[in-house]
Amino acid sequence: MRTTLPKRPSAGPTRGRWHRTGATVLGVAALVLAGLGAAGTADARTGVAKVTPHVSWTRACATPTKADVAACNAKRVTSGVTEYLAEKAFAKGVTPKSADASTPSGFGPTDLQAAYGLTSAAASNGSGETIAIVDAYNDPNAEADLATYRSYYGLSACTKASGCFKQVSQTGSTTSLPTSDSGWAEEESLDLDMASAICPKCNILLVEAKSSSMANLGISVNEAVTLGAKYVSNSYGGSESSSDTSYDTSYFKHTGVAITVSAGDSAYGAEYPAASQYVTSVGGTALTKATSTTRGWTESVWKTSSTEGTGSGCSSYDTKPTWQTDTGCSKRTISDVSAVADPATGVAVYDSYGITAGWYTFGGTSASSPIIAGVYALGGTPSSGSYPAKFPYTKAGTSALNDVTSGNNGTCTTSYLCTATTGYDGPTGWGTPEGVTAFTG
Image 1 (cartoon, rainbow, N blue to C red):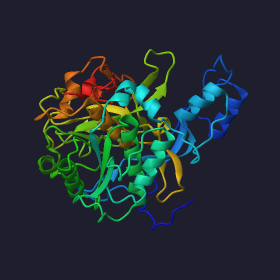
Image 2 (image 1 turned 60 degrees about the vertical axis):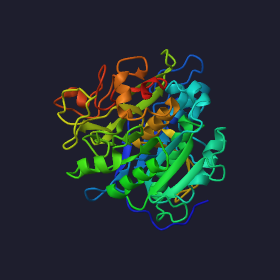
Image 3 (image 1 turned 90 degrees about the horizontal axis):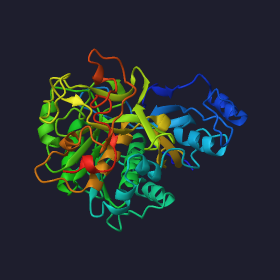
Image 4 (image 1 turned 45 degrees about the vertical axis):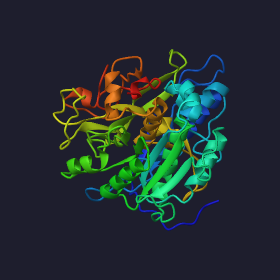
């Protein structure tokens, strides 16, 4: 069933494609059937080759055309074989389907909780905590789509009637909501589903700005904090400007509140508000199951091409926070931590507004920001007067974080700013969560 809507703003011709082999999707499927090794080493259990993820994706939101306007960082897979489907094919010896809205084709809550050492915390923690999602424009199907996602994965219902879910405008109104937008609705579905996946017991507050201007999005952040949220996810960004330091103090300087922001999807190069000194800037990884490791998963820097991949870089305007001590940037360095963002190893999302109602796989650092917000929520209310962006730095180099040491999002004169290395690096920060310890304080 397709919902009839006004045409969404054009996202332009930009379309990403991830190639890890030269085979087409049909060629990969044929190799699976044949059990040949060209697409990967054959599994002794099944005699079939492990399929290499290979997807095409499209942006959910239009690219900003002027300063001080943001775009969401959601990337929707349109065809191909994701890591999730490749794993199913590997384990069961079946041909994986390409993007199919009838069933999930990305990682779900159990996968994500296992990958980040959160299974126990997700089962026990989060009750009474509120994660706020800040986005632009209205998604009229937000509550219904969230209900479908949570029901499918056996999560408890989270509705407006129960008080678990609340949807408001940037002024706090529950009835006078912004104009609906199908692209940002995809972003909102992704954010709500990821918050649910990581912290199933948390309440969720969706704050919808009336436009994607930085000012209106910033006002929405303030409204989220006013309404009591201690964890605020922002899956959007735009080019830096001389206004950023003013935005910092007006919208993002909230002690005792964990504010997470996507690092961006345009590879090396800083964007705002990820560059704010008061937020946790969240980079993106490719997440792969690996039975040969103790953890059971491996991660590398997400990079699709020289212009597509997780963001990182040096801010031109924002002051370096006191807890960040790397020497490659005199001002703020992006990122602090990271989580899955590669569309080829993406997450399952249910969405129905403006596209065929059903299941889709999404990537982009729009996925990693709400994941990290959920981890903060599982860790409990931040201490009064704290800036939670500092918390991972106090656990740097410990088992509380999975150090990502492979991959890059470009080539830099100062290598660590775009190339993963032991310890801190720009694309992945100090790494990905291994439990909640690095996100408490």
